[in-house]
Length: 103
Image (tube, rainbow, N blue to C red; front, side):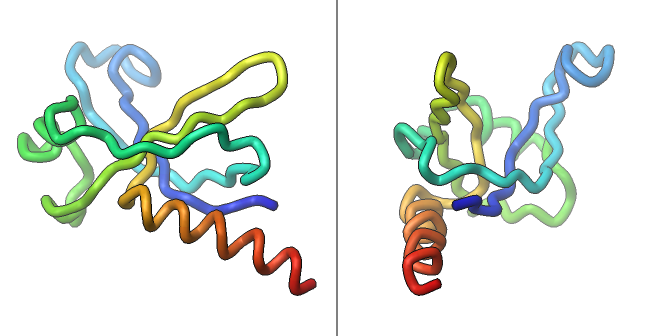
């Protein structure tokens, strides 16, 4: 089942020639059956300091939480950071699975 989340993307060195971190948000649909783990992003990690420095899009609350999820795609694993607490992300995944069962 696909779950819609909001991914945090760091453009440094990936999408522009910028030498500093700058972030944007985008919708991402994740297969809930391929998620290996969900864990909170620690307050000491880059995302929170950059949020306080204004490196995120306007309108994003300074009280926002970030969660790292690991996605297993068979031969490889990738990690993404999404907006929300680990409980909020878990609820979205859990609710999507329940919808599938209800038909």
